[in-house]
Image (tube, rainbow, N blue to C red; front, top):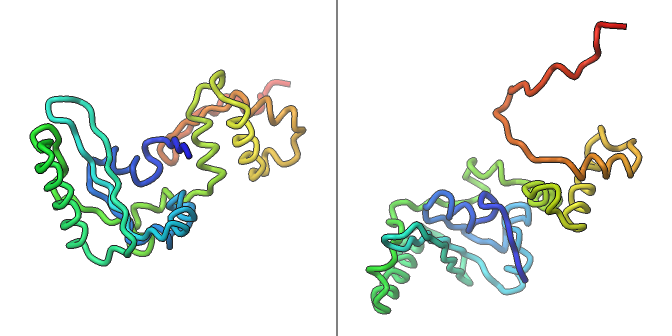
Length: 195
């Protein structure tokens, strides 16, 4: 299977962006809105997941290594130990001078029960699919991308009573733009005072 997500979506993407060691205590127990592959993790009996950012010394290249466990992660000591084992393996292979790992004191748990920083990640699968499609230029979107955008648009009252061809035309040219809360983008489109 091939998964491609924007950098802010998913544990590997968040680890890559923040360059911090992140972990889920039990990926099998998370809803798919938090861990997109939780159903597959449950089938494989995977629980704990640790994401470790690794950068190439003297280069702008970096990547994320994921370690999975068949047991839930019950303490940060377990994560620290796993990171140190990974670091030791790099040393044994003679790669420690080429690769740099974030220090274990940068640990951050991603736990739905006690971490309010992931509230923005609680999104439906249809929104994630739509967001990925909208991140592409309109001319680069596939038929599947358009299907994802159209499907998500149906949840909004604005689109509910619109003819399908008109909704498709609007969705074809949609772009995703993020603005701070309270930002007024344009007020010039309203009704004119002139008769």
